[in-house]
Amino acid sequence: MLLESLGFHDAELSVLFTGDGTVRSLNRKYRGNDAVTDVLSFSFREGDFSHLRPELLGDIVISVPAAVRQAALAQHSVSREIDRLLVHGLLHLSGYDHERGREDKNRMRRKETHLLGKLYA
Image 1 (cartoon, rainbow, N blue to C red):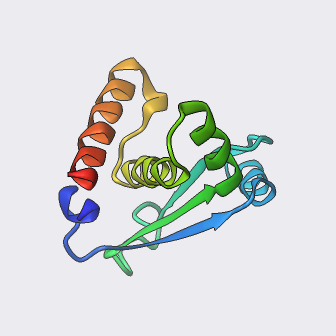
Image 2 (cartoon, rainbow, N blue to C red):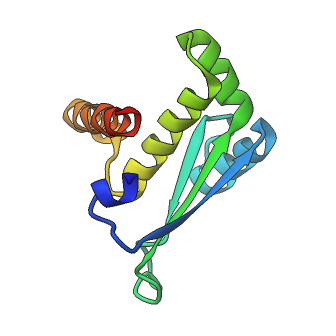
């Protein structure tokens, strides 16, 4: 349902649920940021070989301990937080980027809210 809502009717992605150490290591290696984060996205639709399997969107990596901490702070369930992180990662794979500025951040937040609403409808 989420993929189709974004116009990906025959797309695939992988999701890895892991710990803070793995996420920190990946964040350091691929983003140059030596810190734990909650979710990382790795697009297969970019780069020299993106044309080989265009149906593959990429990988989403979610730190379960980060999701647990954030769920407690937000006072909602861990599964709801994981849903939020999954949607966030999927939006990154779809080209959304909240780090480009306030307008992009607001656009991404609106889309995230919209998709979560569809998920819970």
